[in-house]
Image (tube, rainbow, N blue to C red; front, side, top):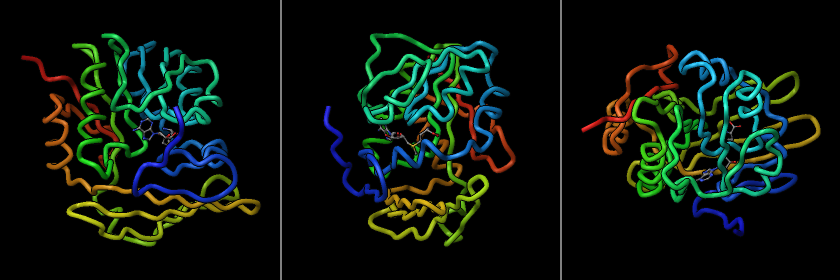
Length: 232
Ligand SMILES: C[S@@+](CC[C@H](N)C(=O)[O-])C[C@H]1O[C@@H](n2cnc3c(N)ncnc32)[C@H](O)[C@@H]1O
């Protein structure tokens, strides 16, 4: 599989850039932001987890350390090469086919649910629904509802890094082109990607279309949600 850039997605900076504009080297140095703790608190101990869009395994490793069994999926071979200790699957999420295998937990983090293309978003959520056990759950990370309105915005990354969300420019019905800069003293990366802001009803509606129902928000900001498959 060749890493063909997705339309509307781009990235700059040292090292390999993935189809959605992510820089492998940048994600390899990006510190955690509480993701493993949120996940651990929301799912049963030792659960099997299907992690969609795992990148270099930034979250995968800490999940393995906590005793979860992780299958890590990404469409970037360069990202997957960095993942240690987990079973890896090289595939676009929307075309994932694990032959009917089901997981206690399906994880769709990193705001992937905001995909610019409605077709891709449906594909991502259908993959979640197809791979979650009947009594399992899907954990999703979504943007804060005002994130694309209050720009530019920046926050520190570890001791000497910085991420700056520079702009969100409308490029179609309900879709923005978002530009982000990542800076360290020795390196700088940018990513441009398409994102659909989702109000809570829009987010829950997209999940409902895929046969998933939110049963809890996992943090005060409501940027982490847990959903269950709807039966019948
Ligand atoms: C922003 S990075 C986040 C990586 C990881 N979740 C983390 O938090 O460290 C997004 C990752 O998802 C992958 N990705 C994005 N869209 C994808 C898709 N439709 N199918 C497979 N992988 C995808 C990219 O290749 C990239 O590695």
